[in-house]
Amino acid sequence: MSFPITRLRRLRQSEALRSMVRETRLTPEALVYPLFVCPGEGVRRAIASMPGVFNFSIDQLIEEAREVHSLGIPAIILFGLPDRKDEQASGAWAEDGIVQRATRAVKRAIPDLLVIGDVCLCEYMSHGHCGIVKKSGSAGDRTRVTASPAAAAPSRALDAEAYEIDNDPTLEILARTAVAQARAGIDIIAPSDMMDGRVAAIRAALDGAGYQNTPILSYAAKFASGFYGPFREAADSAPQFGDRRSYQMDGANLREAMREIETDLAEGADMIMVKPAMPYLDVISAARERFDVPLAAYQVSGEYAMIQAAAQNGWIDGERVMLESLISIRRAGAGTILTYFAKDAAKILA
Ligand code: PBG
Image 1 (spheres, rainbow, N blue to C red):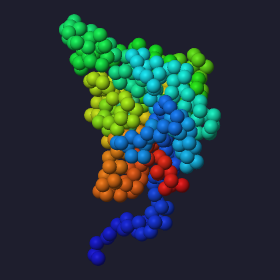
Image 2: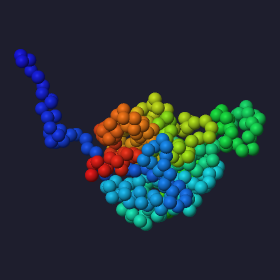
Image 3: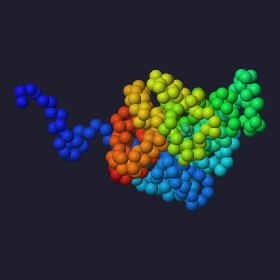
Image 4: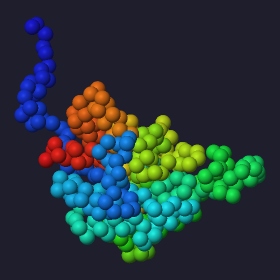
């Protein structure tokens, strides 16, 4: 050849060489496994849209958590399905709420496994929204609500124009939930509701109750996403009317995501999260560049479901795509990944 060739392929000749120069690694310590806990005993209910994911009663949850721990995964995050829902989300903050009971049981059985508490109200509210619902302020809206046949049971039947999510009163319920979780022994509080001011409210409440040492992992940049579909089946938390666009972020906004993160850090968040992960790798990357705090990303239910569905059809190599998706989230800059693949990945990595 009469021209020079830059031989980048030299370092790709064998797995030994490729492994030696690999820039990003995936280890079980980077993973968090989400678990859904429900009332009852001996319950292990499959979620149709999330193959391999179940609703567990507490006794079954313990067995699952033991396996997670034995695989070298340091933490689980708990989502609760209460036995009843109401307009105050009382199942979220009750002393004997499902997450509180599950936390006590897991910490007793496996003290070294970190338990993260997702703090949100949608699973516990009869209307499925992440905050308190109130009728909209304007007279026109009020008339429309009153005219509705279901006006007496406002939450189920309000039309999209006629309600709003009441930010400030919601903060008090979120704070109460966080304190109840801390009292049950939760290791990390993870607010995912996207109300303004929730990190400050939760920090103040935790400190006031003597939990100065309980860290907050804030779902700081959480986007209103179609990728949460399967989760809403697993957690029975789909909004009964309207959607979450008035509190979760617009998927088009990167600069606003930075502002959300900045605000949560100023309010006292110890760690931050971007969610979903794969469609928002640029947000993860920008957050990594800009903020010197531990950064997590949530590979959400829809991301998991897509890979599982394609793999089940034989259209992709599921294991390969799983590992590729996880390494890409790490490469973008996430130190920690919350993923339904945590166990499967840890089995391969161990
Ligand atoms: C609670 C919450 C949701 C998820 C995590 N916490 C659902 C939502 O915001 O609708 C989604 C997780 C997933 O899709 O895997 N608000």
